[in-house]
Image 1 (cartoon, rainbow, N blue to C red):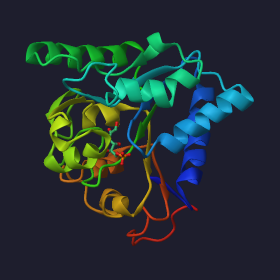
Image 2 (cartoon, rainbow, N blue to C red):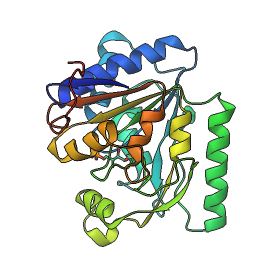
Image 3 (cartoon, rainbow, N blue to C red):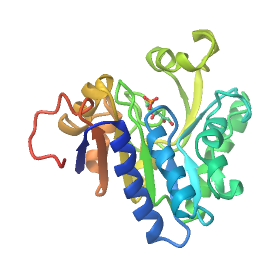
Image 4 (tube, rainbow, N blue to C red):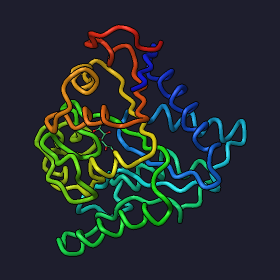
Amino acid sequence: MRVIVVENKREMGRRAADLVVAEMARHHNPVLGLATGSTPLPLYEDLIRRHRDDGLDFSTCITFNLDEYVGLEGDHPQSYRHFMNEHLFDHVNVNKRNTHVPSGNTMDLDRIEAICEEYEQRIDDVGGIDLQVLGIGGNGHIGFNEPGSSLGSLTRVKTLTTKTRQDNARFFDSFDEVPTYAITMGIGTILNARRVLLLASGENKADAVAAALEGPVTASCPASTLQLHRYATFVIDSAAAGRLQLEGYEH
Ligand code: F6R
């Protein structure tokens, strides 16, 4: 695995943007897997700046987001579709028809199952994901694959842990408003991406990052499964790297 330790989250965003731009240049129709949450915001800000100042072109990009809450309409301010429009898609020249976020606007379980299958099919139809961007949960989750998730899992509905709902309650008016279920790409979906780029910043991620990089491969820390990936890169700030024991990481 390639591990790049940078000084702060701004630098994390810049280095991550370098890698995303390099990937975009490799393909006529780059297929990017994207994440929501606070961590990728510096990356998205950097990509928007490059679009504005340097003409970085998103017109041929196809995107697939990792996950979406179940029970929120796409225009709900806390839906991940809304998040992506607000923090990236509305500011670059991507064709919104080529941006995919699982649709979570139904509570009908049969319909949700069909949505998950269609999502996997769409990823296959465009030839798979070239580069998947990830954050990491304080408990080591990737996407909404909480500890204990099956290592071969594909897109499906998952129950969120209380810890994840508490972590995400900051974006809602109250804890009770945080949805209980989400649709998420599986660990298998993520491992199928040709390259994976995990970002982490802040001391509250240090334990999860250490477990992911230096612990055993285990479903108890879903991010540790990236050790099995041939092209996984971590770009992390020094606070998130604070509990790593091994030497020799790139700076
Ligand atoms: C977001 C996602 C989650 C987040 C993780 C970290 O699409 O799938 O796994 O990446 O919960 O969230 P932040 O970045 O807010 O700390």
